[in-house]
Length: 403
Image 1: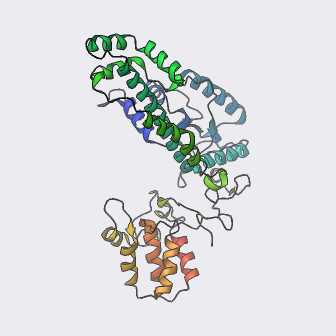
Image 2 (image 1 turned 135 degrees about the vertical axis):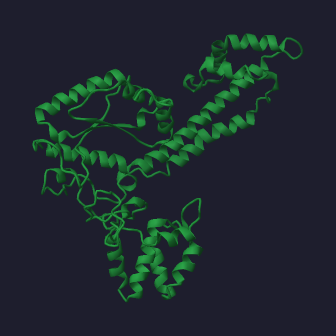
Image 3 (image 1 turned 90 degrees about the vertical axis):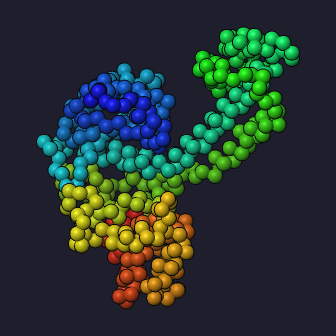
């Protein structure tokens, strides 16, 4: 697979820059790191905080073998990922529901694997919060770099003679750019980690005339300092500090055991859980309604038959009313569609409250499906609470909401 028509490691790096989490999966009985996989891992340099390592199929080896495999994996990763910190490795055994684990299943690691899976799921549920924090940190990083960049350009421009010899002086400063960086660092008390690479910065700067840059603006620098000292810390204080508020999305603490242990493979899949009373669930995954929970189909989205209650029956109606770019139905469009049901306004208001569970004032495809199905049942004189429970069960949403 080395002979590709594109730069594989560059593609991996491109996706890593835009991802919130990167999972590296290893099998418990196959720890070899190929040259291509090694290059992919090394291309993640600079994104180490996004990387999570998963040692999969750990139920295929016994406890003694698992200890040896874990040590061998840590040794192999130590040669590929040059970081002083020890990499966090999650142990688990993840199989599709329709597929039976191949080979012997050892049960002496069940408790350990359940605990490890809970830790991994807790980490996954914290993605929205961590992604928001990472974006704020990126803005802070760019603001610090912009401040240093302004000081560099201002310093180089101020060192140019007023009349003759500008080009000669500019070339001399670019040839000794690290020394100029040290002057700027000492003069303005700037952290060295915020400075760019001198060689790369020199190549970029050679395409411009330093004398043509704008004059240094102390007012803009003061605005940047104010943002770094006050605005960004104030923004960070608005983020929830409790993992239960931002990371678990209303799910109960994963310390309690709730696994279905009827089969060895089922012991590693979480049992359906309901949120704690009074906890609001802001964003259910839209793919949760794409398949019925009782479906035995090998297609994870269910077979396209009328017998599958998870099929989105109002997809065509949604496509005809949603915004083509954002793929959501606005409040006005939804009101026009739902009013055609002939239900009382008071009842439609309650239907909207149920479907718009994240209070965005618009409906995505799953939320639109929920609203239409509830209206359909209400027209058949089914009570609202019963309609809601039935629709959520059909779409596989009962484990996401309570009530």
